[in-house]
Image: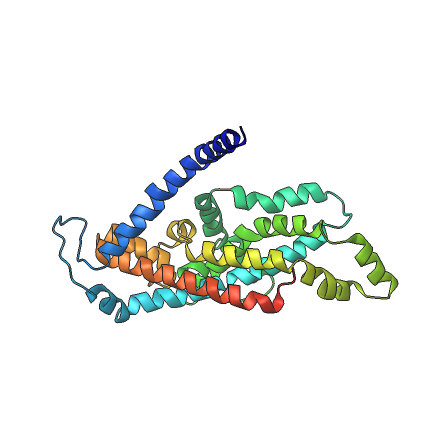
Length: 293
């Protein structure tokens, strides 16, 4: 009787996870194995012939200046992740207090995250317009004679993308931190106040360490999401001007669907996977020093 019950439970488990596992198999594992094989070929989308070329694509990658420029741009882009986390934490702490219209403010901050990335991109293209955009209009009104060109110059375009990303992720980080702040013991905070701790000391010495697991989660997921970002950059700059906003995910797309060089695109995508894996492992090892469970 017990064995029959266990068998039914096991069967129900397989039925529930089956569709998800099928999706992982069809849309992740099989394409991943196929792309790994493509890495050692010269396969072009427009040419059905496929020749085994060994490590030639990897050698080409090591000499490709555009790959290293994309890697540099990716690293600059990743600077937005910790900034968005810190700002999200500050906003969450403020909106966790007894303030007027805080539910409305929480909704407004979260709204960009549920908005289409393409719509976000077009809004910021208008905001960053060099001559008639509201941001440069404000800067001129306070006396800045030569405001940045934002998305139109090679020196400022990557940082403008960073600003868009910070704004886009702010609501998500805030919501996750708000959930974590609900778990902070109010008795502990009251005890700290009675002992004479100032608000900033409470924030830095008590609240920040207690939400460190949440910070670690946001850092890991945020870096992975940022590295894989495609829609916002494609919609705003398409990697320009002068490849100044071409990050690795966009470089994979350009090789695969602009130049139809599938073999080399697979090589860049596996390099991207290796970078994500390395960053995740480093974070996992480093978290033992600052995350308090």
